[in-house]
Length: 219
Figure 1 (cartoon, rainbow, N blue to C red):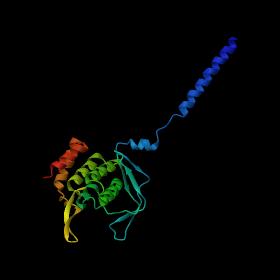
Figure 2: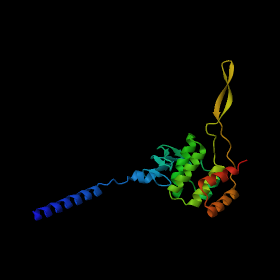
Figure 3: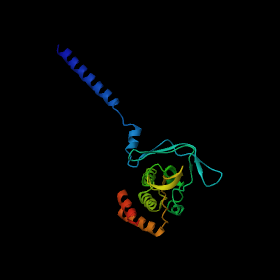
């Protein structure tokens, strides 16, 4: 009887140990998507962008979709067939980044170009996405924040959902036709950008602090 009891006890211990091992082996693992979403700068979906230069030597056509999810969960898409030329970033700012389609700036620049062409979101959101996408691509904090400040100050912005009335003759009556208003871009001030870069390097400001400083420069 004693040996039978010992055998039964050992059998129970073995079964419990095997059960625990199975639980550990089937423990749910975090998916790659969940891990990517938790990244502080968002994540790209798919491989690097594939592009081809067009015959004008100035524009490129996207051969494969580029998709980016920002830290807030918003999805930004540059579809296959989209044409980009870096024009959403004032040419005078290219010297600060070495060209919009070079190195780690490439993905962010493509997405920024497409978002500026569509104009279906506020320009400030597009500029903020550009900053997050730069950081996601590995651009350093000083460079990315300086470019973010420069775009907030000197970007080719539009007034999102702000309309102005334009007279339109309809039959015998004059009616108002709403049209989007596109304010002029502010001329780039390189000294201001250099000053902002020094401030960013020394103070390590947050996004909100950069936005407040940029807004304070407008009359």
